[in-house]
Structure formats: C-alpha cells, structure tokens
Amino acid sequence: MMSTRNRPLATPPRGSGLKPVMGRNGGLPVVGDTLTILRDPQAYLQDAYTEDGPVAWRRALGQVVVALSGPDAWGVVHENSDKAFSHRLGWDRTMGRFFNGSVILMDFEDHLYQRRIMQAAFGRPSLVQYLDSMNGTIDHALAGWPDQGELKANPAFKSLSLDIATEAFLGEEPGEAADRMNAAFYDVLLALGAVVRFPLPGSRLHLPGTQWSRGIAGRQILKHEIETLIPKKRAGNGEDLLSVLCRATSEDGESFSDKEIVNHMIFMMFAAHDTSMTTMTMMTYHLAKHPEWQERCRAESLALGPHASYDEIQSLSTLDLVMKESLRITPPVRQMFRATVKDTEVLGHFIPAGTTVLVAPHLNHHLPEYWTEPETFDPDRFSEERREDKGHRYLYVPFGSHAHKCIGMYFAGMEIKATMHQMLRSFEWSVPDDYELQWAATVLPTTKDGLPITVCRRDRAEQPS
Figure 1 (cartoon, rainbow, N blue to C red):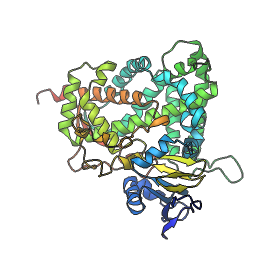
Figure 2 (figure 1 turned 90 degrees about the horizontal axis):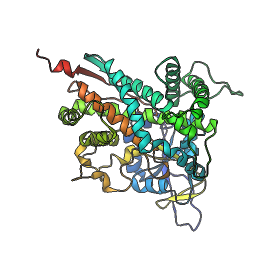
Figure 3 (figure 1 turned 135 degrees about the vertical axis):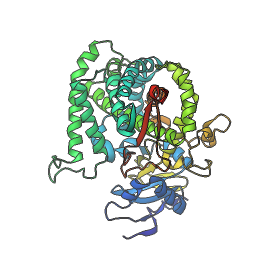
Figure 4 (figure 1 turned 60 degrees about the vertical axis):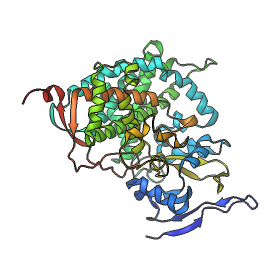
C-alpha cells in the first residue's frame, strides 16, 4: 500500500498569496482511503486535520477529496458568499441517480425558489396535523413489540419510521400499496451504500441482482406509486405532505409539476427516515447505557398523557438534551459534499474549480478544543448553564446550516420525541454493562448487530413478582 505525503493539490495562481492544499495519496489503488473513512470517519478526518490542518486533500470514494475541517472552514463553505460551492455537483456522485431533481440536488436561485414553495408543508399547522397521524402509527408499532425479552431496536425504528413517512407524507394507510412502497424505499436506501454501482459497459443496463440495480428498480416503483396518487391529492384537501405539495404555490402563483413533486417526495421520505431512525437508535442506546438519564426522561413523560400535544412534545426538556447529545455524538449524515464550480479559496488555501470538498459535522462535534470530553455522553453540555454548542457559530451542525439546512428538521425532531415519549411510558430497557454499539463501514450510519436491547413492558414491570 503506497502513501505519498505532503504533495500540493494544485499550484496557486502567481501573485495570489494563497497557499496550496497539502495532502497525500494513500490507501488502496483506485478507492484510496474509502474503507478507512467509512470504518471510522472521526479517526480518519481527525488524522487529516492533525497532519495537514483544516484544509487537506486525500483520495477517497474514487476521487481526490479536500477535507475542510473545523467550524471556520464549515462557515466558508456554507455561507458560500462567492457561490463557488455547488451542493448538486457535490452530492451527484453519491445520490444523484436516486434524488436528481430534489431540493438537495439544487443550487442557488433554483434551490431557494423550490424551498420557498415547500416551506408551507413544514409550518406549525402542518406539523400539528402530522403529529396527530403519527401518534396512532407509533401506538400500533409499540403494541407489536414483545412484553419481555430481546428486541433489535434499529430494525424496529427503521420499520416504524418508514410507516410514519408513508402515512404522514403520502397519506396512505398500511396495506399492499404501502408495503410495496416501503419495500421499494428500503431497496433505495441499500443502494446508497452500494459498492458496485455502474452500468454494464456500453449500455444503460445495470448488473442484475446487485444492491444498485434493486435500488434503481425501487426508485421506479416509488415514482409510479406517487404519480398514481397525485391526481387524487390535487383534487382533495388532505393534510399529508404529498397533498400539501400538490396544492402549494409560490407568492407568484407558481406550483410544482408532477415530476417535481415525485422528485421532492422521494428525497423527503429518505431524509425524514434516515435522520429519525439513526437518532432514535442512538438515544435508545445511550439511555440503556445510562439508566439515570432514562429515568429522568421517563419522569417527564409520565407527567404527560400518552399522546402529547405539539407544545407538550416541545416541553420535554430532558429528552431534548438527550436528543441533542445523541445528534452530536452520531450525526445522521457524518460528512457532506460540495464541488467547486470556479477557483476559490478557503482559509487562505487555493482550491481549483472542479474539486470535490467534504465538510464533516462528525468532526466538528468531537473537537476537544470546543467540547469537554467529547467522546463522553453528557447531555448537560447543552444546558443553559453550559451551552458548549455556542462555542462557535458552526460548531454544532447536525442538520446543516444556511440555505441547505434540513427543511424537515422540525418534523424529524417531533417524530423522534413523540416516539421516545411513548416508548419511555411503555417500556424499560437495558443492555449488558460491557456492550458497545458498533457501526458498519457504510456511507450512512448502520449498526452491525441492530442494537439488541432487553425490554420489559412497564405494566409488567410494575406487577409484583
């Protein structure tokens, strides 16, 4: 395995006063350091940060990538004052085949225009409506959990979040159509982490039987199912996200085309599902490892009814601290990509046009110069007395920032808290003292073992033995 260190990425223009980006070409042929970064992104990016500073290049994911580490570099990219960084081109290699035409793969004026129309679907009145529908879905899911014994939490949350997305976003009750869409959507999720993802040489056909080909087929199923629903949604007065998008208009009276609706819906289902599933998994793990925090959260939830209102959900302050700390330790998207559309500079370093850059919430969330014992679970770091997240404007960024801050972040937070609220009221759970959650080497955070927890339904737990 060859490693060439301290090579400049490109020579800065003469007289610019800019420094070159330094880095190394290491790892395996072609893929470079891809497996290393997937296995332990924190260690990998911390190594680049320590060796070459906040602006460093490496070879990963089949290309040269400039890692822009730390909150100062994050600010340059996300403020994007000279419009040098393209969101669409940065993500196209990873998810363009599945989410092309969605809000995540748009830039500048087009992105802001589409986002403004979508905003109505995530205002407070819509969130209240979504909560009413999701509470019943959560009830149904928890009723199917065992009264006592082992439960694999990650698959359980995966199934629940897909059901919530199907009902709240598409307005579809459980049934054959919903099952078909959930299965197709799951194939799309798997394809995002696929290693083999190219068409057969000289054609548009994809290798049959691979995760990639199943994902492409799954996207076609989702497209068909959503297109079938659109005429009914346009004519109706439903409160699900698809209905809202079908009726949404801009200040100038512009509305979404059917194609735009399909593209936005497929991405929004992914974004809501991935954030919710990962965060609920992490919260469940931390509350199992720290039963004192589980009891503190449970006490707040027991003071409310099983179906908390929107305002009551926001009042669960201890649960909110746990959610924020879980998002800090394991953000749902560990690294985000951009690509330069023209020559630019970051913190005095020259970056040429056509360069893929990476910014990493995961690294920002673990920098010891900002966080007290960053690897320790400590929700009180977000308390009003401490507020470690205020150490820098771009230090705590689990949902991104600026123009591309996650449009569904409030929906996701509501879903997470509503689910954890009911789970705390209904169950107690634990893991062995020596258990440590392990992540698979995948693009998206995925548990190796599904997080097995021992659950006990509380009406059983309270019975005399």
